[in-house]
Length: 270
Image (cartoon, rainbow, N blue to C red; front, top):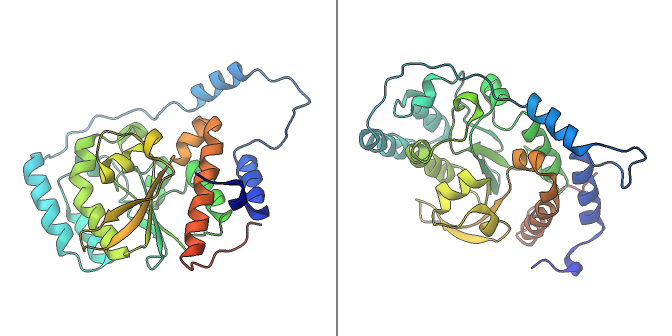
């Protein structure tokens, strides 16, 4: 458990910044707000894009997984892995997406983040975490001294699911060999999983993110390296559930202190 002695002035500055970025910029409002009306308006504004039915060629899960394993393990660099994903036909999401969303940040970073799947903004730009939740994530990580020059980020699924729906377990499973090879090639010392899909896919088991979040565990890569791994809430979930902000900043403080102990240079929270 995180003790009071571990929270310093920079941590407090980070906490205030996270609350501000999430829209809480005053302690007591001078005007009365109808939160139920806000939720009603927000739900009407965030309706998913219409799903357009398409006919896509599909391989059986067994064939797809076998092809996935061989093409993923054959990649000797991130560029080769990206090209292997472009050629891969075992996931039908490829045929409804606009772009392959591979990864972003510093591939030599000591910390790697893995999310769920691209959204509409990511699909258009071909980069992970560039929409509203990605901008919030960047702001939160900047408060512990991390930028895209000092971390690397990708997703379990490299193609946007239609209507921004949650990926199915079968879709995540068929992409898993690519994810594990991605981890091997980046070779981080710390791995942070963003959200339930990434957590379930890489850690398995019956426990969900509510039980697993905020605790460092040991993860063995396919290359045999043992690294620290932690699950935290996805920033999109934080936008929907602002009451979870406290848990997020506690987890970020843990990450910050672990990176410092490992000798990772972090910028000050501005």
